[in-house]
Length: 371
Image (tube, rainbow, N blue to C red; front, top):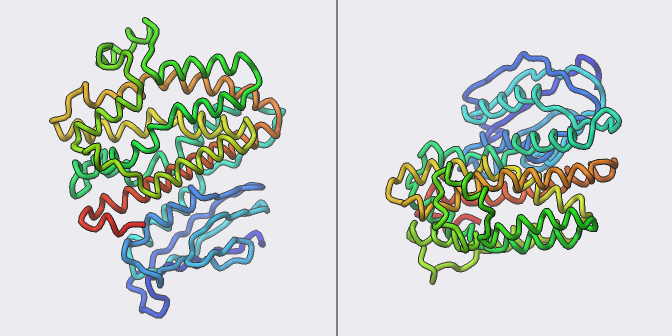
């Protein structure tokens, strides 16, 4: 691609339709070697597509150096040369599409490539960089979470009950995820640290932890001796989910089985990246919107909703433990690659689950039609 070459993007519900509007972007975009725009970045474009756009909706990237995927959904774009890219125009019959694409292009300025100069970063600094990257992922900034926090779903109570119904099939198996990772670790100190996390998952806490939790309004009698999956079931009961209705959806089964596959079949570093950076690291952030939504309802007691503040407090040091272990694996280039790969796999699996819940919550009456 030449220095002054332009990218032209067209987004139209129907390529034969007369465009209703034209938006132009005149900003040059600096890029660097090896800049990768993977699944989470291209999703900004997807968010802007109208829900009923149908098969005629497409985004067309006119440039041979960019991966083009049917219907315009980018799976990966790699820009190999230093250059300045300029978007000449966006054409669409849908204002939301134009807005989303312009935001996507603008956000390119903020995407930093992974630093592959391993001598320039300490292992701890590298892991910290990955932790920050995970919090920018769409799984953490998903429209589903935003709508919960803002109260914009047609029926927030229904959305929370739907979440409780389906998330239980994932949450119930968290001790299994943890023991799978423990079994992959060779260092006795690493295993010991995660076994302490596993003990807390079963409802056993040190005195200083109970004191710390009390500062967050968590009474020790609410949680002592109660395994975390049972705390989540307590919330499910309070929000109105009948235990007889706790059948598992295919989406939850696929999420759980694919996540376990990542933990058990990849390298130990990949398993750590998935459970630590891609899961525990984001818990405090992603559960915040649920706390806001529950508080807005006003009729769920703190005891019944304790699963969420418990995890936003306790998982802080779970996250720290996993990051310390990850730093040991980040001493090699292979370890760094595997940590990030595992992190992204876990985040993308969760993102797919949010996508599914989001579609259901937008139209509860037709939720069963969402695949």
